[in-house]
Length: 292
Image 1 (tube, one colour):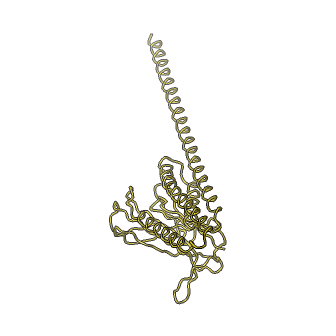
Image 2 (cartoon, rainbow, N blue to C red; image 1 turned 180 degrees about the horizontal axis):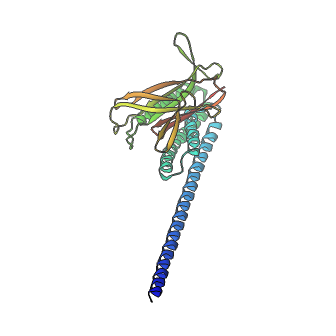
Image 3 (cartoon, rainbow, N blue to C red; image 1 turned 90 degrees about the horizontal axis):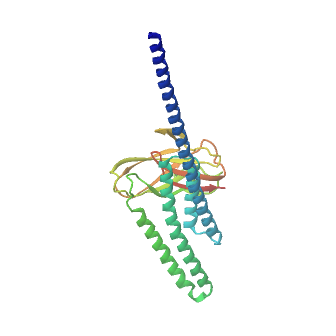
């Protein structure tokens, strides 16, 4: 009798264990499928952002190709988009990263709408100028006033307070320089003549950031995808960043112009260079230039 009770208890125990095992397996499978689905959706969303950026880049290429003399604002904006595309390719596929790139895309879209409207306006003006030699001087003066107005507007935009409590940069530019023994610097586009790479940008005013010592990570990547300068690593959470130099400065709640120099252990290569500026692990500005 006791053996029958023992066998019955054992069967009940085994039954409960089997039910728990099957329930655990079912929950694990659902969790895996859900995680896989989310990752797939994030990957698809990342590709959509990439497609939008590529489409925007093509619009700039078309606009630049329509002019015998390329509009400098269009060329500079096109460079920022290419830098963002290159950064997106190697970025992590997660919600926070995609949201950041979507915000940058939205900002670039607004900028493109303004620049394209200005470009169309300039094309109309140029067409009109070609029909009347007598009005050339007057129209050139009007265009100069218009360009000066754009510069004033761009400077005003740089003063707009960011919604995020981090420092951002505008007007990022990189270029080769020849350094004379006297210390004089001469810009050059020749790779064989460049002694250093000079990187300049403006730290935009942000009322949410307290005054004090700040630092940004500058990354210069050569045509062979090598990080120039110090080429040291810094880790934030699980992300590792290779940087060329740490730009350190004292922030006083006002826009600040900053320039840094980056060297190479070897001769500079010919081709396209990418310049990125990071605030901790966040990419805040990107640009490119070419050495011949």
